[in-house]
Image (cartoon, rainbow, N blue to C red; front, side, top):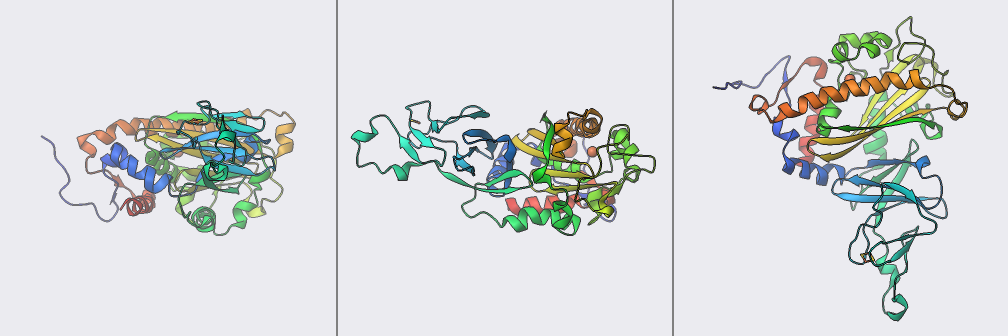
Length: 375
Ligand code: FES
Ligand SMILES: [Fe+2]
């Protein structure tokens, strides 16, 4: 026989979402439509597309989106679908074309601005208006050195929904701009294939109640995290490095000096920002760590994590291992916890959900945001 709580918790405890929100394919489909296909989604690092014709394809909600650099040097985003009979245009995740994108099915060919420029026998069909059969454009904005795309017909304000998330967390936009993220170079990228619902990863990132249990290296560097209050619990708060700690590294040894515009009061501190739905930004004095999530199924999320440093640090060939290892371990510890939680979401024990303790109550705002979007 099973027992369920008779009344919703009050006071110290708040309810979470019910378990089916993490397992139900229909809820995931609604999230694809109303979250990932409706909001700005951080798709690719601009510098990954370093020359005209370089492309990357990403899965956003139910759509494959193709991002490429045009001959004039601008980034462009299109639905990755041929306008002839709908074949997927680029089947690889990344690559480079010389001048044009050619469909592998019947060879319709588009220039890097998406215009239909050639097709077999097209000259024998003079009535066909080529301009009407270009690739379908997707809105694109660049920020922090990343291309953010939005599939909505009328994208929400980028300033409010994306930059606003950083302002809400840090108090102002200058506090994130001072890291000059768009000028940094990629030191390391690790891709994690996580067998968990994307919301478990967001919820885990927002709280630090688990830090003392699963993050020994992180709490050595940021001792205040042992109290369970995440940096995201407060506005404008960065967690302080421990007194003996020299840098944000796996053993607390020195990092690579402060980025040039990082303010005095930001030095020796760690800031974390969640940009809903699928981006985490971590700021420390000498580097930025940026996570992009690609939710692929109710129980599967690919996370691409970039470690970004001053260009001269990366160019010098200095060993980044101790610097990268700290958050790589944090990621592995976090994702293991999420994967341990995922199967339990389908249990009858979690049918009505779980509870949030006071240091986790701000996760309730994320749940409210989500249920409002799905309503
Ligand atoms: S489907 Fe692309 S050319 Fe026919
Ligand atoms: Fe964590």
